[in-house]
Image (cartoon, rainbow, N blue to C red; front, top):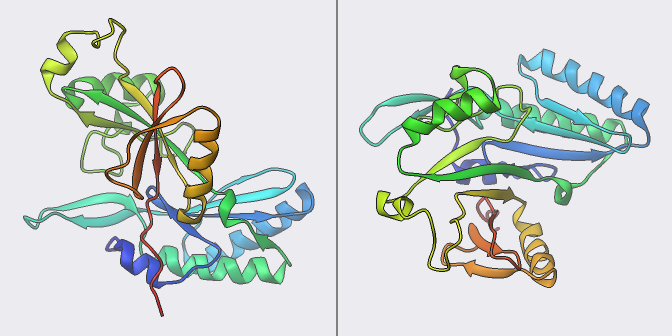
Length: 244
């Protein structure tokens, strides 16, 4: 099934759901674990009917859901097809049905409560280092390139964050130090949040002593740093909602 574009996902107007990283995410507030379990059971029945199911995590006051398709088809500019993890029409269909199920259970969605954390590593050769990280993080070589045409390391069960690689010039890695004599930061954290949450989250980070390092790709990507200069990236994956 073809992967959907950002515009196609936004046009679906799924008010309870937000597109973050590779999937659709929703959080529903529940009054107790038992209520959450009943909701999850109903979601399972809805998924059975459509032949597709979400990934679920729950606590005493919330149920978190992620929808994505492991067999989405991505077509490169040269016509080459890749099987990737992404949002397809079946995810939109199930998201709509889950929204109906939540309403039947009297649950309220908390779109601002969803977020995704991924890891990034600057490297001169992702092909050389990816096997090591696949083995260390997941314990299986198949994690390298799973659901992506590149070397990104992903766990099929979602136990740990995805690890992606940012290509850098060899000269930048050879010295081993920056201008101040300290080891350069190679790893960084990416935090995906809904676009409505991004401004508040950035303001909170700045109020806590952070600084903006690079906002040239804002609002999609904003690089920030803590008081010691350690960097993270605030990411908004979804496009603006279509205007009437």
